Image 1 (cartoon, one colour):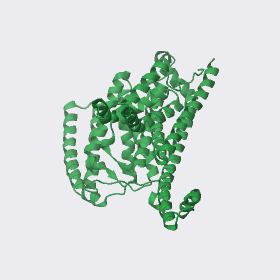
Image 2 (spheres, one colour; image 1 turned 135 degrees about the vertical axis):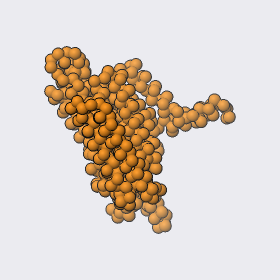
Image 3 (cartoon, one colour; image 1 turned 90 degrees about the horizontal axis):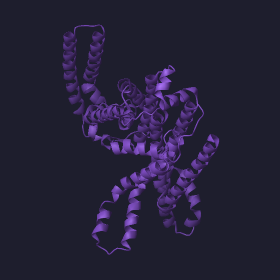
Image 4 (tube, one colour; image 1 turned 45 degrees about the horizontal axis):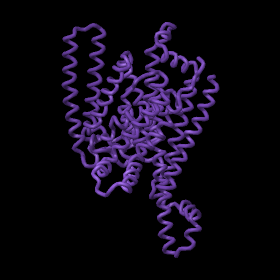
Length: 457
């Protein structure tokens, strides 16, 4: 019976992905291919992020709503690794900032060490207070000096000037490190308390990023990030691309005058350069997504994966068999958060700009969870499908809403107040569409479009 269900689920995966592909082709033919490839790229990044959440929730039942914070750490890694160092800022306050951070770390280490050795609490408190005051003094002086260095353009220390692809790995490591620290504190809590704790820590991370200008410019944003693919302007000058576009549109161009051919070909080359660059990103993102899916499936089907699912299904029985529940949860939490961190780094790389205010719970927590729930928790392909469906709705809800309003306008008298009310608030339709889809899926297919496959343990 399980084999028949799994076979049917495989066919259902093929059917649903094919339908999604036809929808994207329809949009490409009727709107823009650059738009479609942009949707695909953002869907691929969202799928990687949803995969990380699915590993935590679908594999181990960990309710993490701090996704936003781990994605932000990935974005910060792009700035710190790929941006060129601001030598003036380093000369102005770099040494003092390094001293402040060293003093802070030494104060924390001293407090912990002395407490473990049973030293008098008042003496520990005195040492910590003195260390804090010195740390605060040097930190304030250093941050002021750094932020005064050409604040309109820099005003921060910059990065290491290394290849941007390295930042994707560093983003995953940074998120994994934060997850380990958070997990050591919170994973012993119940699921509802774990959710509250991860949400609070996520907000703290965003708050620090927004307010520490010396670090990543705060609310001033960081732009001009490196790109792992060519620039559109360079592609437009490429002879092979010009020849390819001319060959594709040969039948159309041959009936035009020379001046019209040059003008039309220039337009086509400009459009083709945008599509080529987006396709280059698609190739990179697809390789990373496929690699993560293969590795996660191998892990899920291994003895380790069977142990994780056994703990998820019955912690009491697994604990009675000698399994370390907390250790296993910590591993899953770190792995899933690392994948989210990589996705956060990919997103900033694709945008080419780091905007701290863009990290909103609706986009980086609620939407990702909807992707996992709609696609099917516990199923990696389900998370990918959910990412494509929900991101498509997120982007196309506006045009769909305007089309609906236009259709209603054909049957309603012009100037109708109800119609104007809907038209002014058409951007809210994305929330209505997303909520409706999630409710329908939960009502008629509680396990999602592609539920978790039944496996013999």
